[in-house]
Image (tube, rainbow, N blue to C red):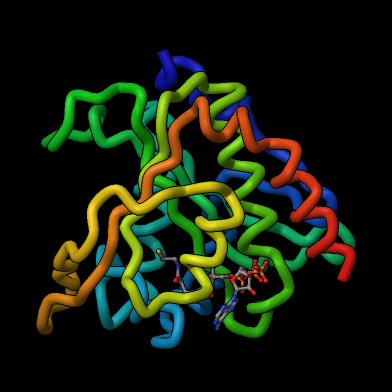
Length: 211
Ligand SMILES: CC(C)(COP(=O)(O)OP(=O)(O)OC[C@H]1O[C@@H](n2cnc3c(N)ncnc32)[C@H](O)[C@@H]1OP(=O)(O)O)[C@@H](O)C(=O)NCCC(=O)NCCS
């Protein structure tokens, strides 16, 4: 079962430029700095807004609890060469949540965010690709899902590189902080498709991170 494998000792994961380690109390300030930036937060329908210091403390505490329970992992993306926090990449298992909307224990939700100063350098793709590999190779999951606002071209770019396909067009995303619903699409990546396309993804991510 994936929840038995999703334990703190599964981390850190590494990529060419990044160490992905579980979020820790020392990350509160970096989490606050990233998510209190409206340019990052406006794409994330589940994030509270305004995102305060208290929100950052809750975010980190929830991340630690989720990993302790095996219901998700929230990983800090740390640049190996200078130890800088560049963002977050996470998995959560909806079937294991307190009020699950699915019974599909092979499904995880993939999420990510990169601090605005580091956008466009391939970190989002690099972290998401590593966690996708972890989900299929180490956790043995069957599929990953991400719901993305249609106007979020950067996030759609990441999912496309990984081989996600749109499975539901035109879902309405209601932001947790209120306001009108926004137009999004549900993207899915099936385990068999990821294994079939893996060599192409490895090549693309090597090319991008060496640019
Ligand atoms: C989405 C996000 C994580 C992307 O991170 P990033 O490190 O800048 O992404 P990358 O540099 O790996 O780029 C990913 C792809 O998107 C493309 N892209 C990046 N920014 C783009 C933009 N503004 N417009 C169009 N395409 C863009 C890149 O070209 C790349 O595709 P390519 O490899 O085919 O060239 C970042 O923009 C972010 O944190 N956004 C706010 C939070 C968010 O949207 N999270 C996801 C919610 S579903």
